[in-house]
Amino acid sequence: MNADSGRRDPWVMSLVGLFLGLGAGALAIVVRRFFATDLLADLVAGAGFAAAAFGLFSLARSFAPSARTIWRPRATAFLVFALVSLFLSVVVCDWLHVQTLKSLADRSQKVVDALYAYRRDRETFPTTLDELVPAHLPAIPPTAMRNDPTYSYQREPSGQFELSVDLKATGEGTRLFYRSDSAYPADVEVLRAWGFVE
Image (cartoon, rainbow, N blue to C red; front, top):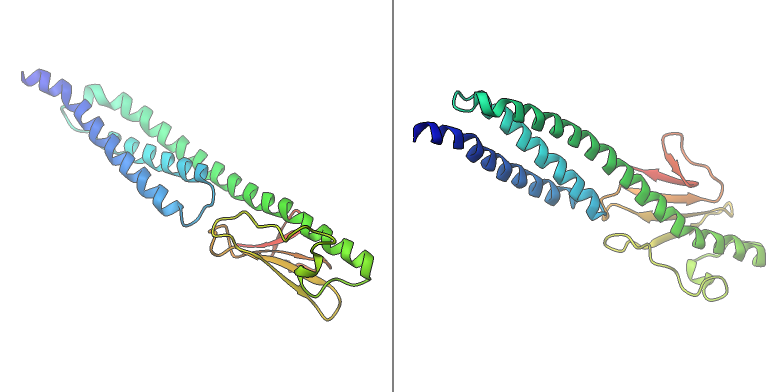
């Protein structure tokens, strides 16, 4: 009975490790909700942390005498899988973050196009976005981001304009903005002709 118990022990501990990993994954998902807009990014991050927790727990357990002969190869495999999962989660989440910003810039291009169309008709940019409706836009489109941030628009004394979206409530950064003169500071990342402040 003792030998049978010893054989079962690694499997019992593997279940404990799995539940710990799932708990870590759930915690990662909750935390990631404050920093990402895409549920897929949350799930990838959660899976990566869950795999890491499970793999590291399994590796530690492999040094127990009762599990050494059975558990060590599996623990090594789980550790490798955990490291690969973590790497992929970071890469994929970063890619999703960039794609979210690019999609916002693409959706916002219709507002930029309407502003230039207004200038072609009036020889100046409008003082507010509302002046674009209905001649150049049926309505000011939503940003379609979490917490529904709206567009901010300012026509400058020079005649140029800046169109921006406050991203702080979305978890995707601080601000995405478009300048008609393309005068972006050197430390600002440019995506789709839009400046992005992390």
